[in-house]
Length: 406
Image (cartoon, rainbow, N blue to C red; front, side):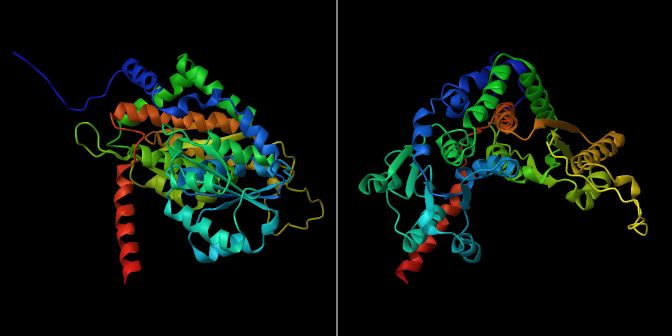
């Protein structure tokens, strides 16, 4: 008797780990924590414009924005990082109209070199102010249309390696260059990534955490097919958006058994979404896992004042007076976590960042990249492609050609 199969089955942790190690030989994001960034840093120091615009879409923007928005309120940067990432005419005009264009530098980022939104914004900006070597940098794969434009106009060009997908590119030149230009400590950012990398590939604490979570999600994907990231800080709102792209575009695939996989990501911010989505979590269908993200130390003593003259006697809540805002925020997070745990049938986990710095956000984002790779290996899908987004691009191209001919 002979036997063969092609159907999907959940593999052992050791098989999954071996698959990730094998992926390292062809998928470029894994080794980014150890890259040589000396050329990027040298060039970053030559950019003296005040406004640094990142022109791009999706993976070309979201990761950089996540890191910048996490860090900007607790640092004083001499330059502003701005993002031109929309075709909405009112928003785009608002983004550009109140900025001194002569004191602006534009980073045009498109891995493929032909992202229609990016090229459209680039052409519009050029109509306002001619893009040239003194105010523009281009980041793309080599031998793309953008690469040729850079060469023909003597504009500084940085290459995105072909084996680094856009949504996994934040720790490549795509994110490191704009962050270095405004003065973020990119060495510590990569050090945070390297800490997670070393632990994971030495099968330490981060490996155990990631492997357990990935296996639970895959084994329970039919019952709990939604993962909500509930971040208790608006500093993490852009991280949540980055997570949604990373998660959805990587894990919404057809596996080797021809079965459609779907672990749907949802972004929540506390305490705001306690007043809306929490009701659905608590009393709705049990189809969601919840990941809470907290910040242990905000390094802020901003507090609610104490009043002794009965000035607020009518509104009550004397018990909040004297408490720091950060403590109140984390007490709200802890109370929500406790309420959900008390239900006993809502899977949840908690990530606590030490403080608001480059190490923390580097660790968090690299952990999520490894988590997505591990879940993808368990699901037996191609985590790194995105065939589902190509059809709409082809339809749009046809419509634009028809419009030009009419």
